[in-house]
Length: 257
Image (tube, rainbow, N blue to C red; front, side):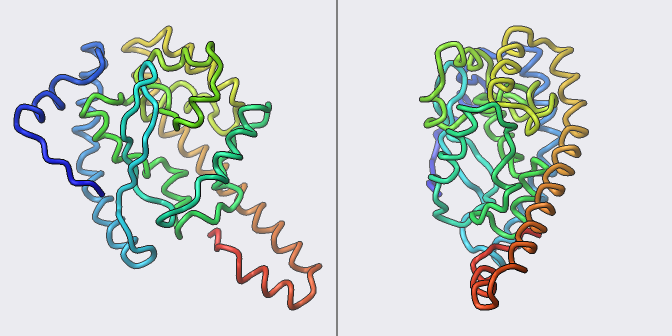
């Protein structure tokens, strides 16, 4: 992790004058939600530190460059849910396939992603891995509600009309997340994000915030169901493998429960 030292003046600018022009009503919602979420962030950080030290030594937080409002890039914070140095090529290839198809945007987690640490899928399915992004919200780089900030290599593949989703400040939750998320296609996600950027209001943000927890519960149930189906498929294939091959296959698979 890189240690950055800010002068008092730069800290004041960072926290009081966000890099984007965010409406007052939206900024008020953001800061109020952050105030409520900070104790949870502290508690989960302590728990994550203990668990990671026991299961996957390395940093607790993960930083990744993301693309936000009007295409501006920033460093996004998350709890680390993957092994240190995990390869991104599989995710990039999977994402490229989703962008060019009408398939539901099911996460690799549901398919038994070997890059995940033990229990990492649960943090991701419940959205708790994104809790450190309240730091980005406080800094004004993100909002509580808005389109998810994408990865640069995803942004580069966007068509011009799709980049209209960046006319809104990125958020932790949004219209897409509460409208089906992993059950929707890439094209549907883009259209929902553009609709939000054109119609955002205090009442729409409030509605999305209250719909987020039920949406996360649905996402968790979907992920558990998909992982069970994946485990059953692996078990059925193992039955038809020769004993020696089956043993090798089991030894190279990552536990998914």
